[in-house]
Image 1 (tube, helix red, strand yellow):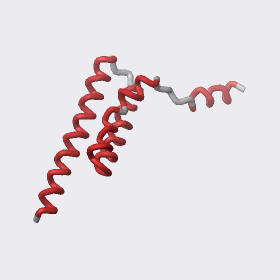
Image 2 (tube, helix red, strand yellow):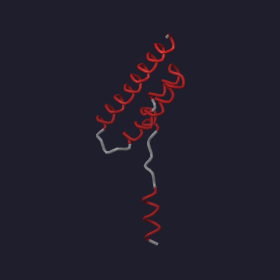
Image 3 (cartoon, one colour):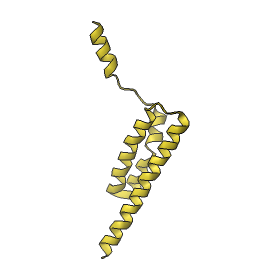
Image 4 (cartoon, helix red, strand yellow):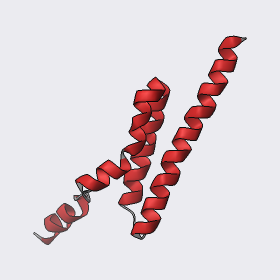
Amino acid sequence: MENKEMALIENEKPKLSTVAHLMAGWPLFLVIIGGAIGGALGVVAYVVNRKIYLSQLSNMQKVLANLLCGMSAISLWWFIATWLQGYMAN
């Protein structure tokens, strides 16, 4: 009986609050301005941000890592968009 209970406890996934989902999902606005590339980068940033919020970091570290991750996604989108514009122009 104890083995089944231990297995259930190990299989439980930690849940995030709605506020944490909203804070983790802010890079998804790239879907609006960035199309498919922005959407893909926004989803990757959201997944990484969820992992950040499930980590053992302090709240300040989580917020800073969240901002860094989102800004990195935006920067990468900007570089890809600029490269594509230059590539298509030639």
